[in-house]
Image (tube, rainbow over all chains, first blue to last red; front, side, top):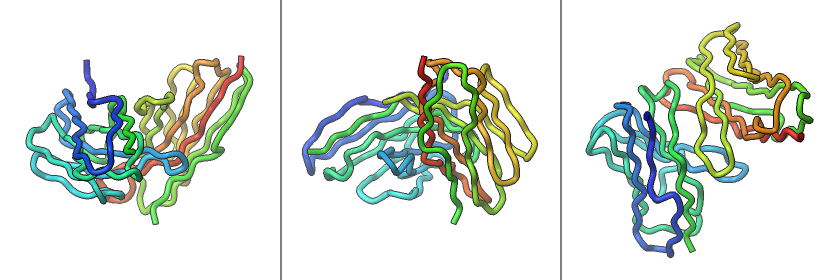
Length: 112
Length: 110
C-alpha cells in the first residue's frame, strides 16, 4: 500500500530537549516536505527536499532542521524545542513539488 | 503575493442540502489546483487535481470545477460522513510548492 509513515504520532517533551520526527514514503517520490498546522494559520511549509541531499527552507524554517540521506526518508529535527513549536506536524511526498502531495497521519507535538 | 483564499470558513448543512465551497487564488500562472479532505487529527487526503479553466472532476457526491480565478467544490445531497475540513491548494508560477488555503470546515447534520 502506498503510504507516508510518520513517527511518533504523539509526543510531549520539555523545552530544549532535542527530538526527531521520522518520515518515510514507499512511493519512490522525489519531493518531500514538512508542514505544521496551527488553528487559524492553516498548513505552512517548514522545509522541503527536491531529491537526495537537496533540501531548502520553506515558509517557517526557524528552529527546525532536516536531512535527506535516502530517497525514502526525510526526518524533521528540533534541536532545542520551544513551546511555540507546539503544533500538528505533517510530512508529505509527491512526484514533483507542483504535483499532488500525499500526507502522513501527523505528529501532534507538545513542548512544555 | 501569491495567495489562496477559501470561503466560507465554516458551513453547516442539513443532510441532503447541496452547496458549494469556494477557493480563489491570486497568482502569476496557475499550474495546478488541488482539493483535499481532512478529518480531525488526520492528514489531508487527496481528492482532485484541476489544471485548466473549464475542467471538472467528480467523485461520488463531490464535483470540483475551475475557472481562471477560482475553483468550486460542489457537494450534492451530502451525508453526515462528508463532514470534514476541505482544503484547496495551488501551485503557482514556477514555484515547486503547494500554497494552501485556510480550509472550509463542513458539518452535515443528520
